[in-house]
Amino acid sequence: MKNERGHAMLELAVSAGIMVSCLVGTFQFGYTFYTYNQLVTAVGNGARYAAQRTYRKATDQDVERGNAAIRNMVVYGDAQPATSAAPVVPKLTPDHVEVRWILAGDGAPVSVNVAIKGYTMDAIFRSFTFEGRPSVEFPYVGKYAPTESEP
Image (cartoon, rainbow, N blue to C red; front, side, top):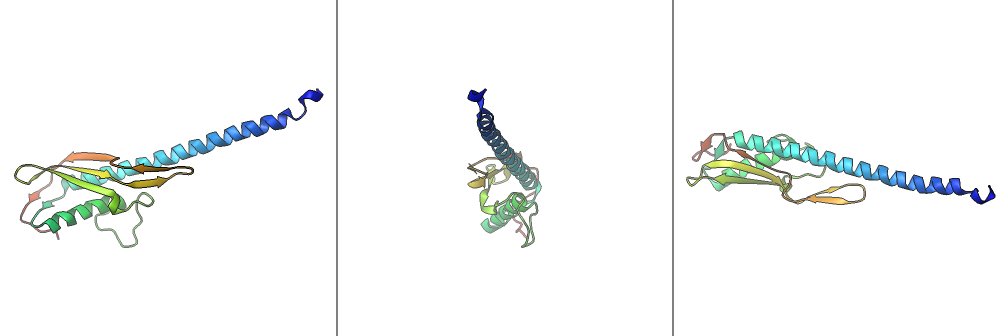
């Protein structure tokens, strides 16, 4: 029995290290999955909004103002957020949202694609960068108004 003294302490130290590593890994995976799921929801909501809003194209500035409203919808959940609005996902900004219109030959929108680009999420021990994902494309079902200006 003298040869077995101290083994319990050694076993506890090794198993505690393994258990803590598993717990931290599980938390990091869960947090990353949770944040990615929030991004998927935000992108889907923004693309749905884009697919239904009026596409005004009197000038290039009108198209860009419309795209800015779509980016705000993705980031803040509101097309015209208050100045103190918090993003739905930490550190997400409108610059991280890409809006691409697929246009027909006459310039009318056929569909809209909304994606996240260059967003870096900090997990506990590692950072993940999302480039081009999540991404969603919806067919355009809104009103096409080539002569209207964005309000």
